[in-house]
Image (cartoon, rainbow, N blue to C red):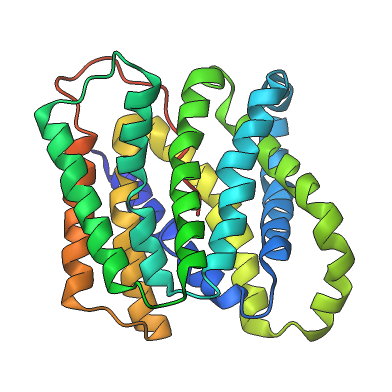
Length: 299
């Protein structure tokens, strides 16, 4: 991989590893729906001009129904659930749970495509990965209650389904067009609920949550998509998705260093199991034609 590729790879590992920390800070004063609206609206304002300049918006709007479903599944619902869950659980724990997305994606791919065979290695990877998730959930079973656990489970399922929608119905749609259009649609979906609450929110909002929300929109959304698409162009779609194995580690380190969240040896064991299981469960038997690049989950 070239120096530019390594720089982009390192940047993406950090940029999509910090949202969990920023969400944890932002939801101290900003409601989940309002946070999603701010993130999608500001992200759309920054990314839409790029998509317009590349003349990709019109093509992205033609398959309007898959685009709407993708927006709900990959942005609207998971970002809402994630923001609400982080009011009750640590950001590092959230990042580790999201690390299970490749495991669920492998299962959904098998259920949706009978030709997708699960080898012994991939089955073993699923078992190892889900064992890591079980260890993690068991260790944190008493923290936050059942609701945030169910919400994080919903986030994992949504993030696993989103790339499948891209592959099946939006693979030939320009990438910047999909990203920009989905952010615009997301902002429109949350506007009726969120906009009336913004005056009261702004009247008491303090600096740290405001900066966290701004960073989520600018760095972790608009800039992240630009960097991710540049990474895909530089190293290919398959290599680019490897960042999903590194993002949780970044979330754990930042949660411990910045927020003082507890990280134990059991957390490390759970992460190792999830990581190993994800790698084994998503391993391909032999190299073949590179699939259409996926838009990784932008937590």
